[in-house]
Length: 114
Image (tube, rainbow, N blue to C red; front, side):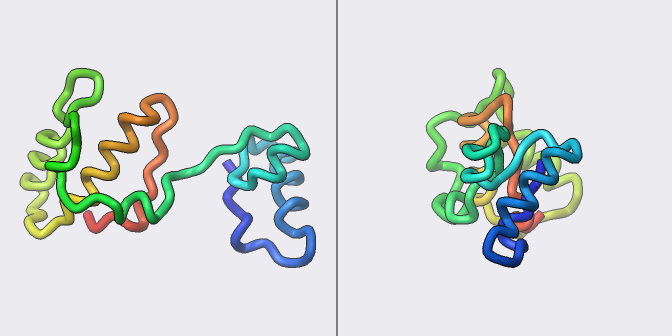
């Protein structure tokens, strides 16, 4: 999966980079225009803004994924690892996104504290 759009330089740098990455064996791109022009599957992570829209796990309508309470499981692992001051809004965002895209979940972990 190629994510070079933000770092590409030049008037067609992003399009060229996406195309050549695909030719070199990558199976998808975050560049929607390159996907459209060259028939490359467009893929990506959740938006940073999505992560910031949740304040707490209470906002989730459902805490489960495939019958497992993933919030409870995450809280258990966090406690085992000694993490006490974590942002539950971020956890809620990851759970909501995983529920929305259960077969293609790709977390944007650079915004996650633990």
